[in-house]
Length: 73
Image (tube, rainbow, N blue to C red):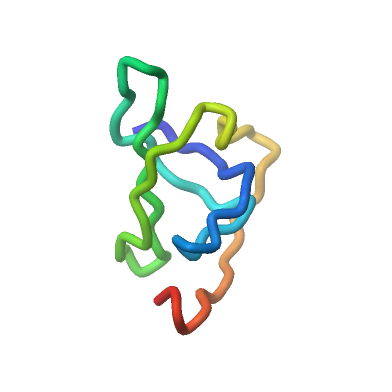
């Protein structure tokens, strides 16, 4: 359950660059299954991503909150 930061927009899932998710699975091909959760604990999206679509969280990262668009909630 390593935390990662999204490095590309995924508007169809309501996700933006900088959103933080947790790796929940790693596939043999190197793809990652990442879960993105709202501050209230509701799963916003689970996405199968390439490792280049995310980066590790670093000690210099600041966690922020943004409001989801009504259509993505």
